[in-house]
Length: 264
Image 1 (cartoon, one colour):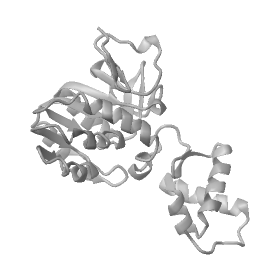
Image 2: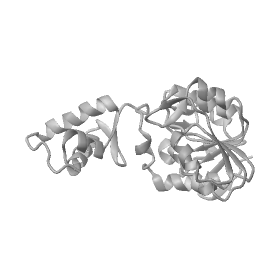
Image 3: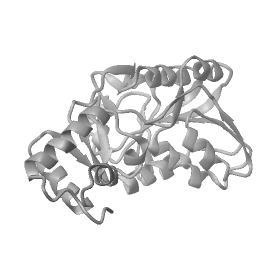
Image 4: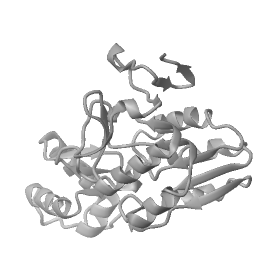
């Protein structure tokens, strides 16, 4: 936290500085704004709350994103603290479906990363991921073979994408693939903010016996620019949301908490 700040700035000037910075970066943390604008973190929080109330930005845990629809990119360091306890519960439920000896794919999302601690008692797993941070976490699993797709690194998401990542995925077959996305709705299915992330998930779904989507309530009913697949292409949806009967599609297992209900 800064020990001094621009005391000569008016609230309006401070907020304009924050907005100018957010227009360049799209998403920021309170600490980042405090450090770069020489403002106390308490001042930053008040200004972010004011801007959020005005509709200019959206507050997320630890920071804010510029309001540009669902396509504003949120960095991993912010996403992994948003709805953290909910994501852990979804991840625990997902991990319970994994059996010894299976081959699985984990994407680079914050939600699937929370699965890793719940897999420590599984034996002889083969795990492929395109997540740079996930690879580090996976080293804690001593009875698993870990594979990384490689490719071009996206700094915001710490994910590997591009031709090399797609080529790597084409060499594997997965019993189960676990992934998240930016939005999911009945009419348009799954979608994301990145074309390359969407294409990679499409490739993974084609190579998987079972595709499992982990999506907290904030993603239900939302749609982003790049389509991944229709909802009918996945076999399991794990969510904390209370779903209407329209979501009970044939062949889709819906899971919430630890209880699974099979929809035939």
